[in-house]
Image 1 (cartoon, rainbow, N blue to C red):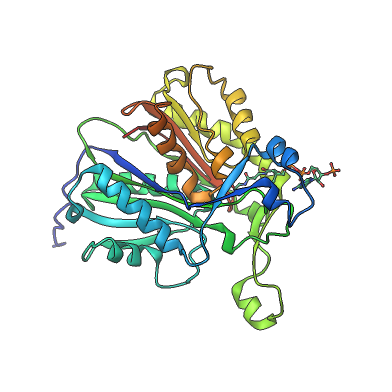
Image 2: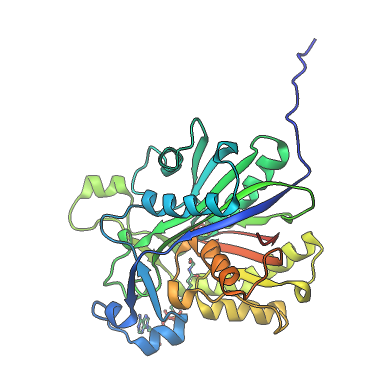
Length: 334
Ligand code: UT7
């Protein structure tokens, strides 16, 4: 006879309990960026919507940023940290193949014997993490999950590359996901198109660097227009699918918080979605730049703190980026 396996104790719904962020101290203007590339403040503002961004200090690591944001998310959630059963760190800029940033983050936050893993889904990493955390909590495999989106992109961008140097920046955002009495995380709509893997990639692998050496340390390279076209064409459709899956109409949203890739991509998505003007839209990119996996929680907290979006309101999130990968879901704001 096959042995009977005792099932996990499931809980019907999950929610975001609290959000915390960390913005590095140093503000970097477009003028400073233009010291190294042939560009202008006007061009950068017009083509990307970025006015300034934050760069981490040389001695600040991905783990440092993640610990700051994670600690804040735990404090703002008001939960007992001992109830956190999983730490998930979405990042593509942790400079170690192993061990994971998550294991170190858990330890530095004083979490003992907590499951910990990193997640590689580029600018969609936070929304992937949210989707996975939703499943973990509802299945009973974790009581609470700390999901961190963190990047120190300045370590992996060539400051003299005019196609990417002005866009990427550093930061961290984190949420606690836990059980809920009512539905508060809609179904995640996600996917990938690996045939476009070269749209955002590294100039070479670390192994090739080891073999070839030279001055060609791998940095990010992006086919900006290709990503732009894909994002504008496909991501508004993914947004609509996430709204339909959650049974929520665009006009009933209290906030639209897309990945802060480029202000023009956000504007194009608003038009394609026919998002009514009364729905507030995250525009954190203006002062934060594109922080990849960190951009959505950073933008979320800014909207909540400024009163632009209400606590307990309904928001549509969508992350998209290298892979190409994407994930979107409707959530109740903490
Ligand atoms: O977060 C992960 C996902 N990433 C994204 O979603 C990024 C998506 N892509 C973008 O946001 C945009 O493609 C960029 C903001 C990166 C670039 O904007 P663009 O409007 O696509 O610029 P482009 O590459 O089409 O270049 C337009 C013009 C060109 O000049 P000509 O050929 O029209 O004379 C470029 O040489 O702008 C020129 N250009 C610049 N000029 C001043 C390109 N980069 C710069 C620059 N400063 N930094």
